Amino acid sequence: MAGRSRVATKASGSVEPGADPGQVTNRASDLSLRPGSASTSLAPPSPTVVSFVVTAKGNADTIGVCLDSLLNLIDLEAAELVVVVAPSADDTLGKVKSFIESEGKAFRKAVVREDPGGSLSYARRLGASISAGDIVVFLDGDMALTNGFYRTLLSKMEGKDLIAPAVEVVSLDEATQAFKAFLKVFDSVSSGVGEGGVVPQVRAYSAKALERMGGYPLLSRFFAEDRLATAYGLLLGLKYSYEPSVRLLKLDSPTYLRYLSKHYRYGRGIHTDLTPAGRVLLRNYLLLRRFAYIDLPLPVATTLYLAKRLREDQGPAPLSKVMVIKWLLDFGMLVGEVAGSVSRWGSRGKPAP
Image (tube, rainbow, N blue to C red; front, side, top):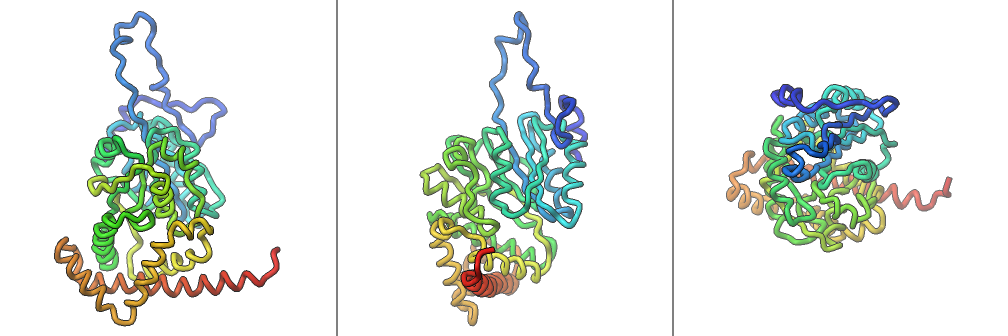
């Protein structure tokens, strides 16, 4: 990448004797000017430090793209990288360690941590607790930054606590192209709802906002953790803004079957992942999700609505393809909810281990 050659000219980093080999700390920012130096009175203001917390599990195919995209940042010396890796069957952890060994010295701090993998919310909470940035951005191992993300984020974050970026799915096949069009419509509509569990989800938090929230909230294991954190932040009265100009890329696995499988897991998670408090926070979102099931047998209302929105937004996929992906998402969620409900209620009669 072009970013790699530029990164090589950055201030060199060092690994202290006995330090964690998974951590590289840039010491250039620790150098202090000596008394009497002509530059002491012209010292620039401290830069805004942005911490990127990347959570990864089974992302060997995409984690390289995710981490490489960070090299496009304007000032890597004012950026932290914290990667939390859950146990994976592939070489996700090896690829993360290799990246940090080769590129970590360009960052203010670069660390990798392993977690048990029992909760995505816990992994993010762990990553946030390690970071020391003024702004904390949470990424998944299948996401990537767009050019200009860093500069735009800094400008939009002024006076805000929470920023929800636009997430654009990379078109890899017919299914991802259809989901990209559907997601664009959904975000456009939900941004005007004003309900914490429905609005576009926050990915960037001020450090003060996370402190007020008591860290990243543990309200779910895997299902809707972004929605829950967003809803909780809004409940506390934090300043939220949806900013379409702050863009992230999403590298979804192609094929309709993968979307069906993923949303089946989401449906199960409603019953197996959510805490009681999380269920209360998402009550309106869950009501809307279940209302969508009514449209499954004959999706007339959805067809008319999507046709109108796609015509307004000039969507990249034909209506028929978007209808297919919408139907699969709802069907997968419904079947998953039924399976999760059976599992949840069945486990209530079993004695505790």
